[in-house]
Image (tube, rainbow, N blue to C red):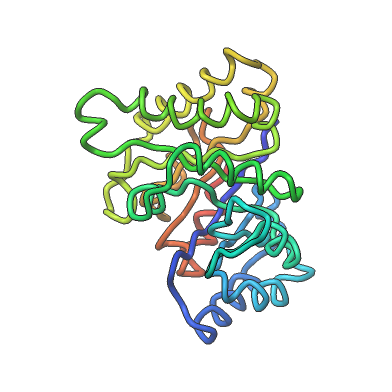
Length: 251
């Protein structure tokens, strides 16, 4: 039985004051009814230490938004996997569409980041998904398969059992436009099927979460789909009440 996961990606938002208040509110609202899902928050890197301190002893897990592919070196402004591990980070986003689209991250770079995260005993959340143009051109499956196969071919299918996959249609991120539950389930089933060709065991184990304007109104229907194991939540995760409602939508 796959345990659901709901992760909040706070992106480049917040201040010390607002993040402190958000974390306080989340910890106060977190209770035993959330045991059905792992709950993760990914604050901006400067607030990892603050978040680590405030989440210690709670059931909320700390994640990070990015990592460098190299262990150390002259990479000004970057953060190594070993550094994240020192702050008790458990999950790390890799391949988020904003980094692919805005910062030019390639499949090969994402593979290297994926491996770097696992080398330090953290779990990568591998983000894959197509643009609106690609979907309208009938290329959605081809694009998603290429992004996933890059990792499978380099790291092997067994590595996927120690990861989470986040399907995030680029056209639905931050736009308020969400894939229908049927569209999301269809792609999640396709992704699981790609892995099943290599290992039915791993395909049954790996968690595939949906990301793309997830909110309190649509979460329950999305999470009810058989191949959707939770969500990667953007803007709605910055509102404590809404994020907790989303977490409780896991069935």
